[in-house]
Every structure is written in C-alpha cells, then in structure tokens.
Length: 182
Image (tube, rainbow, N blue to C red):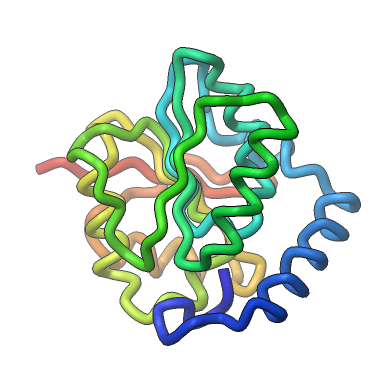
C-alpha cells in the first residue's frame, strides 16, 4: 500500500510503479523467508492486510492448502485485480479479495494469522486498524508484522502501545504478536 493510504486514492500509475518495484524487490529477497516466521499451517485462515499487488498471497494460499483460506485486503482496486490474477496464475482458489481502507467485514475471532507488512508507517489511524485486527484474530492468533520504513523497536513499540498485542517472537524478518485477551 502507499504511505498515507487512508487519505485519498493512489493514482493507477503510482500503484503500477510500486508493483514493479515490489517485483524487483521480491526477485532479490524471497517473500518465503518472511512467511516461514509466521507459523502459518495447513487449514489456517490468513488475512493479508494491505496486500498491495499480492507478493505473499499465492505462497500463503499454498501453505494453508485447500482447507485453508486467504483474505487479501487493500484499498486500491488494481491491487485486488493483481491478487486475483496471481491466484489464477498459481491455480489457487482459496483467496478472497476485500476492497477496504480499514474494516475487514470479517467475523470476530475468525483469523489465525494477520500479515501486516510494509504499511504501518503510512497508516493515519493505526489504533483503529489494530483494533480491527484484534477483533478478527482468534484468541490464539498471530499478528505478523514488518515495515522496512521503521526500525524494529519503533514498530514493536507502536504495536504494543495499543495495549492489544504483545510481542512473542522476533525473527530475522518479522515480529510476531499475540492478542492480549483480558
């Protein structure tokens, strides 16, 4: 997603340029290394929040298998088209796209893993988004986060300051948080 993604629409040309840079990035550093740190298992339900052009979606769809499901949420229609095209090319049918800049529309306690990658720095209302992610995560669920625009300590502090999530693991590429249920 574009920084400040909740403020107006990203022009199509800008999204297409971003998608191209992500393809170059993905050729240099496999996204699988990030996913290996998430704990995604077969039959899991995963939400890729701010999925962009879908760098993770096909891999996650294969990881969860036919009995699992992947929701890919983004505010840009071209992102969802790119995800749908990627799912078609990968021959996976367990992907649903969601057009939104905040609310998922998913039932409470329905998601095993949320991917929150490379968008936290641009959120205008991070607390409201963290509340939505907390709502949809199962009590045993995991929020996997990474943002190359923020130092690890800053991202950890920002997420933990919501008082909704606690850090449980720091990997090479990602941080994993569990929801704090009171």
